[in-house]
Length: 588
Ligand code: C2O
Image (tube, rainbow, N blue to C red; front, side, top):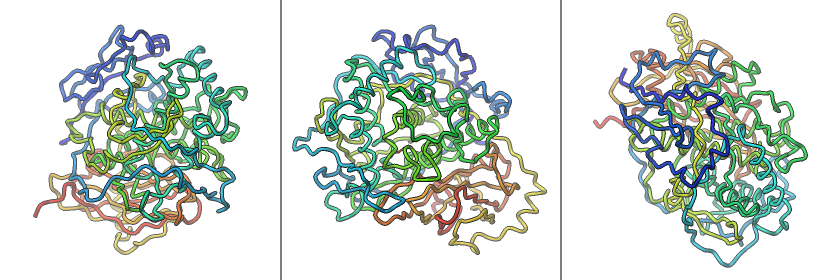
């Protein structure tokens, strides 16, 4: 086994050790440095600063045997942690164009309802301002520490509620008012903007490498506006810790109908104690769902990614069509949470449809955790296994957006200025990461797989494929080399107005896998409904197989059996082709 196993053992964190909010905001001296971001190499011990630097109990990084990394299913609710790194990096797609530019606000058009195809009754467009300032991050006097929403104090809840209440009471045309803030999402995500100077090409911040940066800036200003409204420059948004069993229910602070944090348009079946289903499997056994969730997290954060683009999303440049392809977290857990909160059947409002998602205060809490996943990817997963997590392409770094800041000044921000959360003045409460080493057990028997394989058609014979039912087919592996192997699904065409999802399994013998918690789960494609001009998008994804082969002990086989399981009802997805490639490609 070539992979390297690291462990950042957090099992010592028990409830009484979780630091209270008062300790989250201790003195200006909570100044963890980047050393705590764990950009470590093996054998280096790593401080996770679990308690604000006080009473520091250092979880040590150490090499461990793979088998020791397994998590006992009965323990998943307790939240265990250790770290397993993966993947080498591939060549960077070449850049030749220009960065996507910030929209022209005076050219903002009307967004369209996805379901009725009527113009939306809400105008998503922000107030126009002639003065645009290039934003400079102000000096940081005290790091804001975003807390886990399940663990906040009554004082915090009071302040947060007050801030959102005041935001809701601002005049409707104030760009800082709650509805204007919500409309930012609608405008940037539902086709209200075109790319400046590029005809009618949509400007879209989802399903590409702009996804993480755009939402980071969005939350950054939302948070600053809230802080200003309560005169507390240290105010930090909470994050919904849905990646940890302790946070896998809707955070209670959003559920009081008398609170400004409440939204009536949520799926009532999914209120607590329902456990969030990050795999959108429909399974209702809480223990099974938790196990599925940890497998989803492990797969999308670690096992399934071979490079920065697999995580961040595909390059999206000026003059190119929107939605080239989402990164693994965007199409996985991120979409699942949107859809789980929104009201289906129906239009998915509020959270389950991009035009309305920002109207639910829970949206910003959800996205704080999405953003936290980015910080973990950047600073916590070992550099030795992901040597190049940075995208240095100028078309990425120089892409820009417009937002109104806390003083209602229109500002232009760039991707390169948001790459380091601590330079922006915020960080996240440290919580253990039970998915880090959640290596799912193989549950296949060689004999049964051999039988399944003999009846599975070859991939070449069934593509292009309309994905209406479960399909299973054989794909030949590449010749065994040192490189990683990637499963590529190409020319995926989607009806963007629908919630669509499918899962990918490898050598799975089960026809209806409602259980993702096994080695056979390779990845997911899922999208939140949204409007694009063409109402369809073509995209591709790749899933790294190398570590999955190791987990399943099938590295020496000549081909694999792939199963695609649609989770949506009816048509909507067509897949153009599928293949296994080497990464990096063999130089021949
Ligand atoms: Cu802009 Cu979670 O979507």
